[in-house]
Image 1: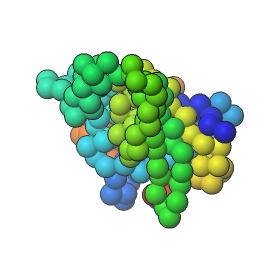
Image 2: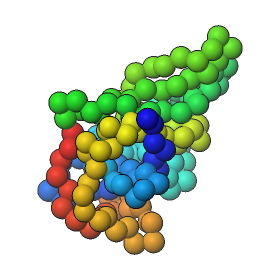
Image 3: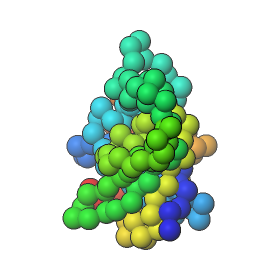
Amino acid sequence: MDVPVRIVGVFEVENADNPFVLLRDEQARNFLIWIGPCEALAIQTVLTGTMPARPLSHDLMLTLLERLGATLERIVIDDFSNGVFYCKLYLHSATGEMQVDCRPSDGMALALRAQAPVFAAEEVIEAVKVEQDIEIPDEEQPAPDEDAPEGSGPTGDFPPIA
């Protein structure tokens, strides 16, 4: 069963090589996906409403989909195996629905731009959920760049998941 999830934000943790995306479902279950800095920027720009001077790769992907007459209906983070998350884009076009494999970070960056819903498989959430409470003051997301102090983000000790 696929469960709707919300992208809470992109955060950094002190002494971690990469930022992570925090996702939360309707039952307040949280899970993290560690991502690269470029993908963090691509997600964060949409969350903060920042418009880059030039389109990013995910902006190009969305433009290509639109020009080809396809729409992104949803993304589903559908598997977690050997420390790696897997995701599918569900696209709709005149020829019907198709699925395309992608990295979750790319799927989330594209879904935010297309205003498409994000889902995760129940089995994935249960396998990787964070058992501690994560508090985000006023649901604000710190920027993943120089504007955010080192170690800013949710409280708690975040072990690497992927």
